[in-house]
Image (cartoon, rainbow, N blue to C red):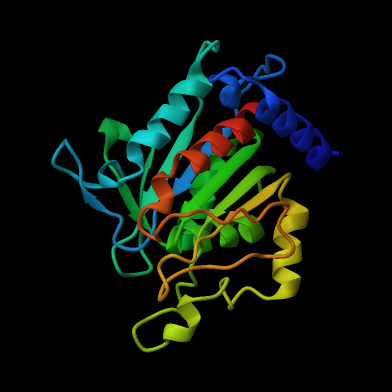
Length: 240
């Protein structure tokens, strides 16, 4: 039923001539979803505040715009969490409840546990790019919370893509097998898997278990800021 409801909302917004329709909500909801975004490899950069972390991601402005849109018409802003990576298996995340707005570092399990704590019974919108897209898929298998929608943006396998394993850099993450992909689809209210092939040595591919597999005319390093991606994220957030 969740997939049917989301498809209906997406069709309504896609057919509207209203430029704001991509973020339109069909009815007021008492609680917003938890918004989660995961940046890719080396996405941790120095932000305008001088701190290296999620605020330095190229997609940080788009993520904050999404949070602002989900705040409209509500008494409180939705909870959110954003993460980035720096060439290792450590997640550097910033959450809406962070003391003094400082990022925290943890492993994957600690990051997923933090998401579950913030969710606190809310539905979760999970999105991630590149290695962050792979991590979003892992979250689709690991989170205890209800995943309302999952968006993998040109996901790249962290264990199977490197300078020494280039064949693992031009496929959908091959360490996630068919059973696991079906599990992700079953546990997610709606799954959109974006990919591109303009960067010939680094790209993902369709996942047949996903509800949608849009191919975008973008490079691997620009697809995470593509307006089509963030328009769809707004639609999905509004539908939860």
